Image 1 (tube, rainbow, N blue to C red):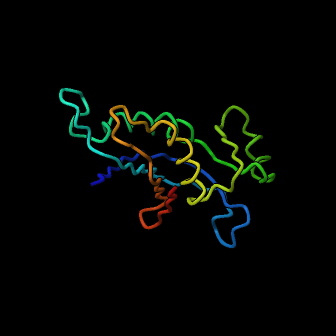
Image 2 (cartoon, helix red, strand yellow; image 1 turned 60 degrees about the horizontal axis):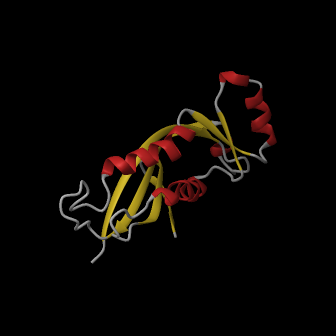
Image 3 (tube, rainbow, N blue to C red; image 1 turned 120 degrees about the vertical axis):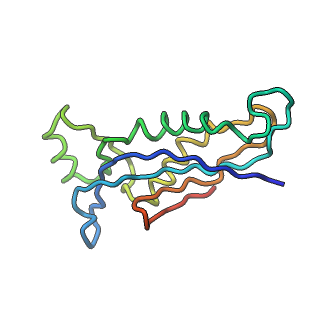
Length: 149
């Protein structure tokens, strides 16, 4: 039987959806929650630190912090094709942290991006067939997007 676990990090991140029909076309931000869902077999190797676990939650946190949180927290994520927003952000110079991406920064696209950042770092140390199965991105308490492989 397969076991699943989840761990998340939160970021304060700005973005805009340049072609949106409503208010999301304006510069704004969210308290995002990036939640990794991992499945595999429980480690059965006697005496190791991860015995009885899939993966130590603190190890997942380290990966999420390095690969997601530290990249987009307190930054403005802007689509490379959004010339208007990029021009406005350039005027702020070094006073502003901007992350330019090759996708429109929607929750759906953030979910795939975060999955791609985290997946290579979820590895089985004890042959317990670990794999990242989904990344869930909460944009608001009522709105979540998920990307599954």
